[in-house]
Amino acid sequence: MDLACTPEEEEFRARLRQWLGEVLPELPDPPPPTDWPARRAYDLGWQRMLHDAGYAHVHWDASPTTRLIYLEETERAGAPYVGANFVGLLHAGPTVAAEGTPAQRARWLPPILRGEEVWCQGFSEPGAGSDLAALRTRAHRDGDDYVVTGSKIWTSHAEVADWCELLVRTDPSAPRHRGISWLALRMDAPGVTVRPLRTLAGSTEFAEVFLDEVRVPAAHRVGEENDGWRVTMVTLSFERGTAFAGEVVACRRVLRELAAEARANGRWDDPVLRRALGRLNAEFRALWRLTQWNVSEAEAAGSGVPGVGGSVFKLRYSHARQQLYDTAADVLGPDCLDLGRPWTLDRLSSLSYTIAAGTSQIQRNIVAERILGLPKGR
Image (cartoon, rainbow, N blue to C red; front, top):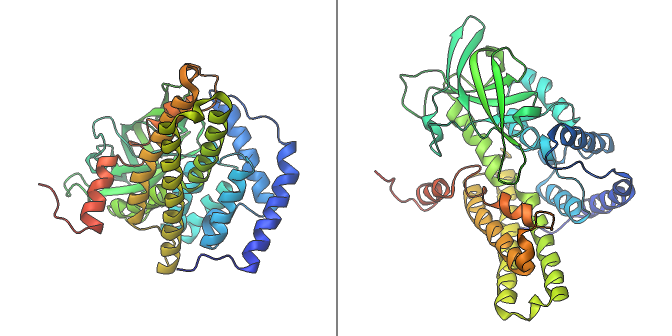
């Protein structure tokens, strides 16, 4: 696999680097992490700037190398993350692009790219845990609509979202992994109630969502009725395979900052800490190479959809991120309890990574069964 950059890709890097150098100094300071309406406006404003400059398409239809160059340069420059737009830009949008009808792509994709609409993810349920196929939210067909009743939990950015990628059970008599459909739900539809959940860090990026006979047009179903599990695997392949790619670059930047802090406060003299930083450096370099491989394999397959290698990445990245911020606590010492210090809130949020986007136990099962060919557990 040749990952060398072409002259055109290097020209893209230089042009992007110059643009970032011009616009980033003019950006206002981001709002506090607890003010999600303000963060929505800030994040969508940045997305609109990317769109107007011709960079909004990079996550979807650029070459693998161009996509990774974009992630490298934006992270190194300290550009804003996709933030409130991450479900639409990195999960729902790619799914609609891969599985939606021409009308659905025309309706939903341009507003995501222009920074006009925010999506949230309505997959997890209170009684299902990490067993996504055990979902119980029901949808029955009534003319041209589905009528949906049930609840979701850990719904990212629900309180500021316009749309929700929603999994529902449309055939209760079918086997668990069948009878599921993937719907696009308007969050302002009658019968939708959002109750924000406050995290350990004090923010409310997650919420409970209650659905009381909510009508969803059948035209908002992506894929065939009862084929939602397959469509969901497309969504999760993006979530596990490429959605965290930019964060790997960010973690490598944090490693450099931790080394500088350790040298400044005397912790660098500890050989155990230096070994931990060295191991993490090797880990994130390997994860970046794995990202390159996953993206290139998806492109070579012609689908653009990451494969099961995304589960390998998700499994290793989740644990490496937690180790990174545990090491940050070692560098900070007693200051790691100060929420105002760098990396403290990141350490709290890292605790969720072995659960979000499929638990580590689920990822191990996928790796064992679909990559190593081991028999399924009974």
